Every structure is written in structure tokens, then in C-alpha cells.
Length: 239
Image 1 (tube, helix red, strand yellow):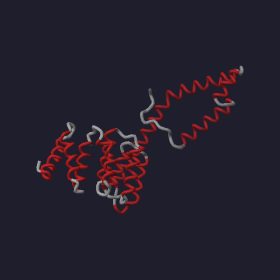
Image 2: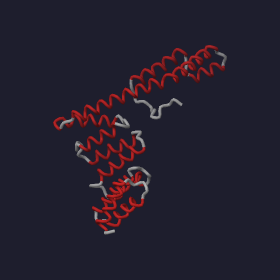
Image 3: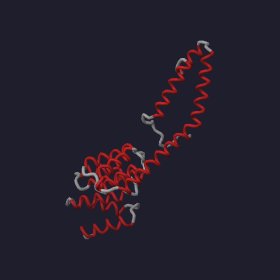
Image 4: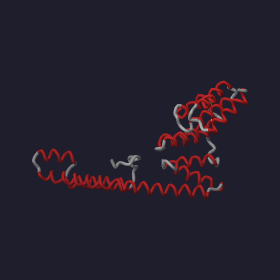
């Protein structure tokens, strides 16, 4: 019941090394692992009972305190990433673009659910990334590895579609935005409008109209997006 929702296997670190050392030291003192102590107890060795009692007590203590220490570590890491993002975004300047690009990419690699997307958006908005391939790689890294809330994930997908609209073929655009347009997300009307504009620019007027019409018939569309879709239909189709 106390398992953190974002709990995951930790990477190699000093804590992991100390834990492995403690485990090995305990096995050395006890003379074997837990399973071996069980069959030793079956053979009548009462010393195995002492080792097993120690194991149970250790587990009880660990289960009572690990969550506190785990969450404290997560809180500390979150604060460090937040400070790193704030400093980088405030102090960013073109003369040190390479340095700050590295800083923001490190934030993305932290897989923090708040600051990884913000770091990518900063890189894009300030035109620090010049390679579309690299931009898509970072988008995929966030979408595949970061534990995002549903609507934040849909926003990231929409932003990926927005960035790709200038150069991707229609099958790729549909594939990118499919998770959003097949949902009831807040970002669904935005994605439909984007696809409508995409096809209208390509001269595929009927496909564009189909996406605009979906916005007008949706009960979830906000007023601003509804009005934009309606204006496009009136302007381009006279309806």
C-alpha cells in the first residue's frame, strides 16, 4: 500500500553498491542465502532459525522505513532538477548555446515528468535544436520513458505533430496524432484543427474539411477552436 506510484528499479549508484555489499556481508555472516537456511533448518540446524528470524526482522524494519527514504531521495532529485532548469532558462544566452543545450538535454535524460517536457519545449522554442531527427528522438524519449499524466502526454504528442507538420508526409502525421484524435482529450480539437490546416495547405480540401467538421460536431470542443474551424469552413467552402 505504501509503494510510490512512480517507483522503479534504481540505476547503479552508491546506494545500490552499499545495499549489495550489505546483502553479501549478511550472507557471509549467516553462512548462506535465505533458501539455504530453510533447508538447513529442515535438517535440524537451529542456528538457521536465528538467521531466518534476523531476515524477518530486517524485512519488517526495511518495509517500514524504505518508503520514507525513497521519497526523500526523489524529493531531493526533483528539487535539483527544478533548480537546474530555472538557472538554465534564466541564464541562457546564444554565446553559450552548446553548454545550455547540454544542460537541457541532461534534464530531459532525467525523465522528470515536469521538467523533461519543459526542457524540450525550451530547446524548440529557442531554436536551439536544428535537426528534425534529433527533435523527434527527444520527443520519443519523453513519450516512451517519462511517466506523464494523460493530458500532459497528449500535449507532448500534439506539440510533436505541430513541429512535424512542415515536413512529414500525411501517413506519419496521422500516426503521430492518432493517440490524441482517437481519445476524448482536451487536445483532440487542437489536433483535428492542425490536421485540417495541414491538408488544406497541401491542397487536399476534402480531407481538410473532414477534420474541420469533426471539430464542429464534437461536444468537447472549446469555443476558440470551434470558431477557428467554423471560420475556415466559411472562408474556404462557403458553408
